[in-house]
Image (cartoon, rainbow, N blue to C red; front, side):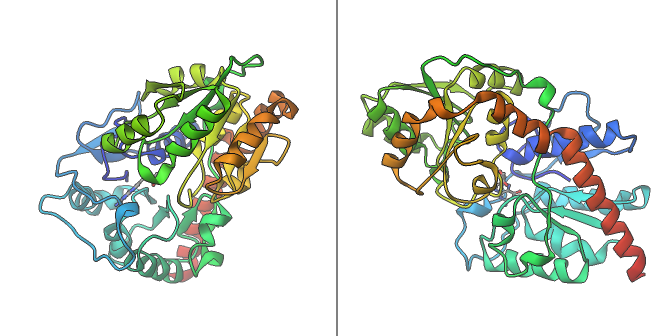
Amino acid sequence: MSTPMGPLGSGLGGGVELTLSNIATEMLRRGYKLEIVAPQGSISNSLPIREIPGELIQIPAQNQSRSDPILLHKNSVLANMWDYARQVQSDYDLIVNFAYDWLPLYLTPFFNCPIAHLISMGSLTDVMDEIIEQVAINFPASIGVHSQTQAATFTFAERCICLLNGMDLSIYQFCQEPTQSLAWVGRIAPEKGLEDAVAAAEMTGIKLKIFGLKQDVAYWEKICQEYPNAAIEYVGFLPTLELQKELGKCQALLVTPRWIEAFGNVAIEALACGVPLIAYRRGGLTEIVQEGKTGFLVEPDSVQGLVEAIKHLDNIDRQTCRQQAETLYSLEAMGDRTEEWFKEILRKKILKS
Ligand code: HBI
């Protein structure tokens, strides 16, 4: 059950789009049957997709304030997706939810089919914390997260199953010799802190290649006005094959989140290409970057810290970066963790019934 933020392939679903496609691909490879339920207009090479019509006007949870109520608009694609799930649930052993939304969590006790919830962000609003906790208590092992740091933002961290993340590393080519350029990858939106990467690029005089969906155009234009002398190149929102080719040529990936990123898909994509990480010591990145070996963790929001780390990039062996991806973040490693999670949920369901 995909995120209602946008059709699969649009980039509006952020990292969840990649996570969902990767887990689906790996489960099919392991012989499971499945279908992906996603908003109309979704594309995903050769994966079985059931497109659901409806309005894509779900408010991004990260833009809400803690006390905001839940809002559901008429003909919401989220509601339509879950009505479809209700109708077909008896055909399946398990439903996997990728939406960071109240409705799927609230509906869990009303379904006969067990539901696994892969929670893609940390604590954001009181009403979401409350409903996630209720499901975590009443349906043991059914809340999956990507990192301990993300789990720690919830009061019920010990009830969350930590899955890390993973992707098909065979489509990421290792690059030994980078060009003189840095990379920044992500949805261009304020919570991603792009302006700090641009400021660091301007201070070091190294070109910054920017990849990702230009989601907040006003935010982008403000950065261009503030840093007229920065050598930046907006490459665009590329499909994974092109992204990894360009990303691999860069000396490092700058990761500058303003918020607690649950994990950091782009960070493991970079490692897979041999690209070291320079990241704020914040969120899931603190569990990915192996300090001084596959990158550097920097004082959050410190542009000077980014600049300092850039000077020490030669100490990093790019092979070590690729090695970390292969050991921890391959599709097989993530598939093992995810399959074990699913089995744990079904074991607990049997115990309970
Ligand atoms: N907001 N309401 C809501 N629902 C989501 O599924 C959602 C979101 N914001 C961001 C998001 N999903 C994903 O882009 C990140 O979790 C990766």
